[in-house]
Image (cartoon, rainbow, N blue to C red; front, side, top):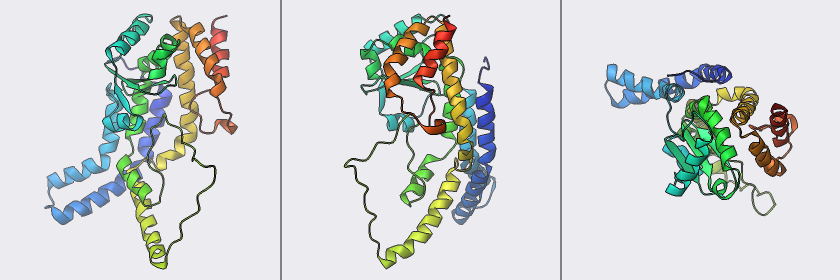
Length: 295
């Protein structure tokens, strides 16, 4: 197996695994206590507790080492389906323009009108709008760059590190937020007015504090809480990988077509201070780099 994972992603993922150790220790202690109440203390019980504690880290490493497709939870979050025969033929023709590449075995389509695509693990996600527009070949060339360099595997390893169902429970207790798909932006609330906080009775107020404490413990046990400290480092790394995928597309003759696509999309850019929350460079900056390569 050719090892071509980006070193920056490996370093950030390694740091995330180390920072997740407090969560693993919490899971180990809780699992040992709960299992000890119902099962005899033996090597099998120790193994189960260890898997509960360190299973997320092992799953993350599995995604990094092997071309694993995105799981059913993520596919359900984004509403992906299997590609039709017509869509498979179109993607096959686009990959035929890139020597030495072929479509991934895991190819899913999201029925949305916008032109969008991303890679998670070994799965290529394409929105339906790409098949109805002129930019499919350029976008596929860009995503082929992510597939060729293992960007999707690093992304899936990071996605699999937390135990998201525990994070969901913490959110139900009023701590943190329910997990969202990485490619999704928050949907603005309708109506344009802030909702008023509900009035609570004395009894319900007495329950808030222990519920919040339990939610905080669950959020810590879920993992991913302490690794959030690395978010400022992950964002520029992901932007650098977008530039690398653009360069891959340009090296295979899709630079001008990708510039045309980015020119159509640049109106969707929303400026944010200090790149806050952005995982992609601005379209105009990507166009500048692609144009410089063509000179």
